[in-house]
Image 1 (cartoon, rainbow, N blue to C red):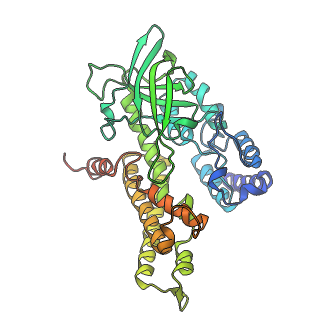
Image 2 (image 1 turned 45 degrees about the horizontal axis):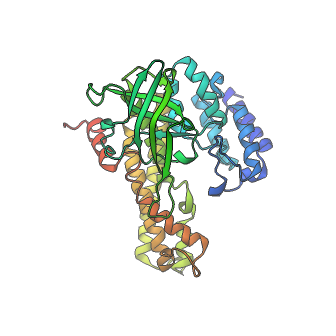
Length: 396
């Protein structure tokens, strides 16, 4: 038996014996674990599961053991992912720290910063949010104006961020700040980490058309940040920012596979229920064609995405191609919700009150929420520019 097959048997046995029963069931939104100081664990089994998985180092399986990972090889990680899916286990932890911040800390942070922050991310002890966009500098991220001025051994931060996902629930923020106003806009930016409980930090949630929102405005007024919390070099934050955006876009591209919300529902099954059938097929031939085309697009997208992820694992992580997947993944997700609402008909246009099921009302709100997919994480226009320049090599 090869070492890899031995690891497969070990992983399979561990997942079967250590996962509480409810951790093998579909995960409702209310039970998703984001970790952090405010985590309530609506399902007690979720706490047990997180503790067991993080003790194994499997929340971040390829991270070095000294930083809270398991030190697995890429091949072992693939095996673990396969066994995780086979066992239908829930993710123990969802985390921007894992998907975005952690990879750039591994690449750019000092040893002291790695040992301070990475194990806490791996164990779900700290929940992170991202301080990038500003009210007047959304797509032009490098034009940001939030300033950090060094006073003795601390940076004093003043400014404002917007569209800060889950800022009201987060413990720490990774934040882009301007540390040299005289430099060109790309060269005067630094990458700071600081506690959201710091004096001078305030948060105001933003309500979206869907009725709720993960987004907030975040304000900084004379926030004092230790000099030691600067990641990388002074005024070298743009390089880190671009790298982190690649990881973020790789994360967002997963929505194209329909991994959340009502998109997990089988559109085909819903159409048969709401539209009706004829000879075992969806009665409306036009709708049937649209669903078939979407299913083929989804399959092609998933295959291409998995291939790209395997290629990235063999190299240094996601590259410019992440913009391609972010762009198409968000378009595919929006298309999915358009189909869902078409399938539900008038039952997909409810907002509240009697006459609508919980699923129907949720689908309506998720359909409205999906409209923002092509804006968040970098607009579709920006992604197309990146694809043109860095993937296709087209001239400016």
